[in-house]
Length: 402
Ligand SMILES: *Cc1c(COP(=O)(O)O)cnc(C)c1O
Image 1 (cartoon, rainbow, N blue to C red):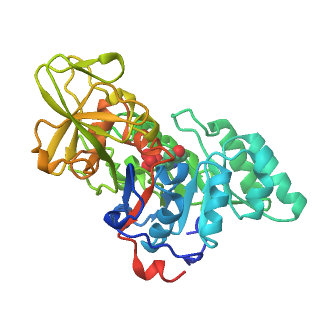
Image 2: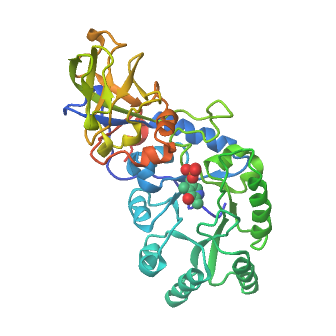
Image 3: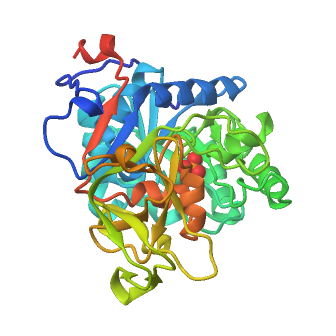
């Protein structure tokens, strides 16, 4: 299809970090990213797109997992088209992928036009002023500028009104697209994560009407949730983000259709024995009902553990994992530390130095998000910058090819 650039060459330096256990530096916490699971998820989502190309949304540093290794792995799995939120993100991506098609969802044309043009990025234009500014630039430079048109169908974020879209469609048809090389007509779902929401169909019908104003231009409606809603939502190009990274937005209704990609773990630094009546953490919000063995884990809200993961009276605490054992959070999560109850683990199975899983294969990111009153997307994009990202199952044939 027209929306993508050709080729999927991987260039630049190869990186091949060892498995997490071989890490030479002492580590307080780490985010282990399984690039094999990421590639599998891409292939699974692409296979669902009946005839549609599967693009990859890698905004916000690939949802916090690290743009470079994620983008390279996705290319290895067959991705040719990417979306970022901002132009600066797209410029970074262009340096990694000289041949990929790159769309910018939230461009600021006032400041970014030169960079967009230079780096062959495709802005998703969402209003009349943007269309005019961008095509004027093309005219001035004597080039037909590439663009996507983002139309409003009901979410009321970025997107041009139906009236604007109709006017643009007429002009575009009248002059044969001489000034604007339209690569994509797109819109975004408000309630895709709820398969029963009536608004999905309403948006689908509106989108069908609006895309027909731009005949022959490829169309795109589906984010992750939209891909999983079914083929009607796929059009020519799908745009999953969070599902690539391991979260199925319909997980309440279906068995997860993607594999977890990220494991967040932190080191148990100290083990202590408390007497009944002693308290834990700031605000002394937890009081030991009996003698307890507790552990201090080296990750806190600065690392992206929401403070709302703290234990609170009347609510069952979030339980982290040490191997097969579950260890409840005690008291408040602080900036750099979280305390857990080691009562269910034998001392020899949880000595200082043990890694504690905050989320991953044993503790679902959905359960952490729920406890914190948020969604997995916010948890992943909120993992602290000081947490090293460690990559496993890198495709060796590709990483050696750079
Ligand atoms: C973030 C975003 C996506 C990807 O959404 P997910 O729910 O993470 O799959 C797709 N399209 C637009 C316009 C977005 O803003």
